[in-house]
Image 1 (cartoon, rainbow, N blue to C red):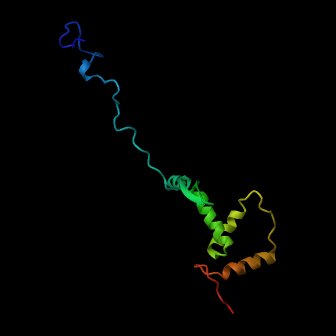
Image 2 (cartoon, helix red, strand yellow):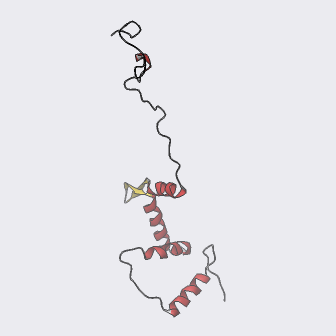
Length: 129
């Protein structure tokens, strides 16, 4: 192949750059790539909760999402009578497909308010007696 400097027939000009300054085959025209988009806090939380972590269940290593692991811990804590976890788990009950639908009677609502009032922010019971 002859160089255009040595080829008197090649004329450099409009839409005819010198061959040595043209894009080279296999070399990107944008080596740094597209800049990353700024993410919102909600997107970051979603990304973190959807990431998978290894967990040993029944002697076998399985991968579950952090969201599944968090829900499992909340529900297990509620089952083990941890008042803080119970407060977190109760709203989750309404999300289950098989959750029973019921109407809260005024006396039940009063009892629930009394029950919630009897717990401090740290989850321990108050003794009003």
